[in-house]
Image (cartoon, rainbow, N blue to C red):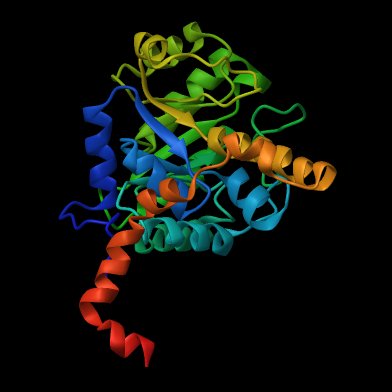
Amino acid sequence: MQSPQKSSSTLSPGARFRQALTEERPLQIVGTLNPYTAMMAKTLGFKALYLAGAGVANYSHGLPDLGITHLGDVLEDLRRITDSVDLPVLVDVDTGFGGAFSIARMMKGLIRDGAAALHMEDQVQLKRCGHRPGKDIVSCDEMLDRLKAAVDARTDPDFVIVARTDALAIEGLNSALDRASAYMEAGADMIFAEACTTLDEYRAFADRLGRPDVVLANVTEFSKTPNFTTQELAGAGVGAALYPLSAARAMNAAALKVYNAIRHEGTQKNVLDIMQKRDELYEFLDYHAYEQKIDQLFSRSARQS
C-alpha cells in the first residue's frame, strides 16, 4: 500500500526542485526532522524540504554539529523522508565527506535515495556551525575541486548543486563575492550566502552573480542573520529562504515544558494545550485510510480468529 502522502511524478526530484524555484520566490524551504514533520509541511503547502546536518547530528545521534556524522547517517534520514513524501529535499552535506571519490560516492547515494539538491560548504573538514565564532575555510581552489567532483558525478542533470560560502564572516564581503562567482563558474546552480547580517549583503550577491534568484538565504533563529520576511528577501534578490530547524526548536521547547510538568507536578494535565491532539495526528498521517484498507482486504471475522 502506497502512503496517501506520496504521489507519483514523472519529474525527477531535482526537476521538481527547479520547478518549485520558479513557482515561489523566494522558495520557502523548511527543515524536517523525520517523515512525520515532512508530512505536516507538505499538508500545509510547502513546496520543498530541508534535511539539516545539524538536525541529523543533534536529533538522530545526540551529537553537536561539528562534522562528526557521516554520509550513511545522512542517507538513512533522507530515505525515511523521501519514502514518505514526494516533495523535493535539499540535503546538507557539510564539506562533502571526503575527497573527490568520496564526493562522487555521495552524489550517487543522494540521487539514488531521492534527494533533489545538496549544499556543500567551503569550511575545513573539522567544520563548525556557520553562525559560531572560530570557523575556518579552505582555499577557493580546494572548494572548486569539491564542486567539480560533484558536478562530474551528477547523473541527473536537474539535480541542484548549491555552493555554500562561509567567507563573509572570515574574509569579508568582497572575498565572499569573488568566491560565489568562481563557484558558479565551476558549475554550482545556486549560492548559499551564509551568515549575512543585512539585506544589502544579499543584494550584493544577487547583483554580483547577475542572475535572478540564485541566492539562498539561511534565515535561522538566534543567529547572525535577522529573521527577514519573504517580502524583504525577495526585494534583495533572494531566490530561496531556508528555515533549517525552526520547528525542531519549537518542539524542543514544548517537550521540556511537558517533561517538567510531569516530573514536578505529577501530571501532564496543565500542558495539554501545547500538545497535538490525537485526531490531528491521525489527520496528518491519513490514519483512517490505512484502517479502511485493512477493512477492505480482510473481513472482521478473519481478523478476530
